[in-house]
Image 1: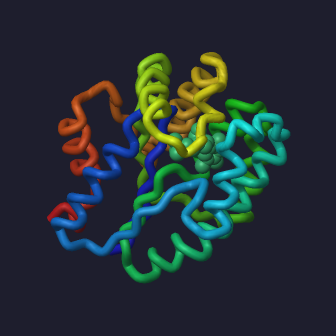
Image 2: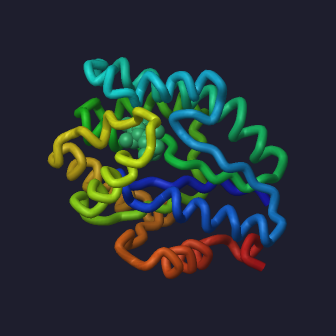
Length: 211
Ligand code: TMP
């Protein structure tokens, strides 16, 4: 069965770990799936990612930043996600449109209704079937993200360098979206042990995928 699942949360929320566990689960269950991410996921998208996440581009105008994320998403959704869903795959996507609503809307202050309008046109009203929001205090997430940054050399440090207040708006923004769409956005306590969280994620999957 096809299913579009996205993972969201603040920096250092543990999405990558949980996506890894879910990937192993699907492999073991022999379910066809596609693992992808935003920004990125296409050739053009990976180039856009480089522009967006480098601290060299910290001066990007919020609206220019917004359109780059949307351009990335249109390519990604139409060329990668939609075809995979049509082939009956489970699609696991590390961030999607909710990230733009939260980072560029709640974070940078762009108009939320306008963001929604552009998204519904760009994606023909498509939304993920299920979104896992890993929620945890900003201080804890940022501490983890900084540790990871010291280790890797990707140069993707623009958002980790934002002020604490920005990240608090992101956390609150995600929780606001979850309150608006409680059946799609499942809020999980990111402070819990990773095995327990994995079990909770599995328990929210449709029976057809668990069986
Ligand atoms: P990640 O690899 O940790 O998910 O980092 C991607 C960064 O890009 C993260 O800080 C959130 C940011 N972002 C946005 O601001 N808007 C978006 O639409 C997406 C997908 C990501």
